[in-house]
Image (cartoon, rainbow, N blue to C red):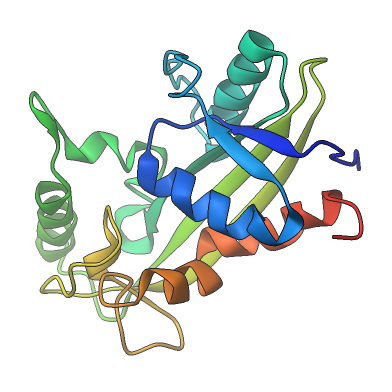
Length: 203
């Protein structure tokens, strides 16, 4: 596994919430983060059919454009009764002509589960794949996961995306009801980061 030896990491995202989560997780290692948005990078088209493919597209595009090591995240919700959907199309389900509407996306997930008369518990998982790419084309891949179930109605106004309908295993709260730092401690992204941080030296 290649070590990361710098002190600044480019995070290939235009999502401020995701950038803040990643910055918080890297803070103990003395690593500062900068974003693709700050560098004026366009968002590459995510043409992959898996989380790792899409994360690789974003990480390598950013590393090539800036000459900096770049970290990209592709994540989403897999609902077992829906055959793993929305999966890599998690954000696409929320797309509207005027921006993303995750209430609409959560309603769609619920409606599709109801149409199938899916039994409880409606098991699901949040998946996160982190890819750290270097300008020379090398990369390292770190997958993470958080198992749980889909609940209805929506609960909580914290977090983002599908958090109000996802209740992680071992908790009585949805991600939408949790303090954001508590969620960050146990989330699919935290699981991936626990593997990623091993490349930051002895840290």
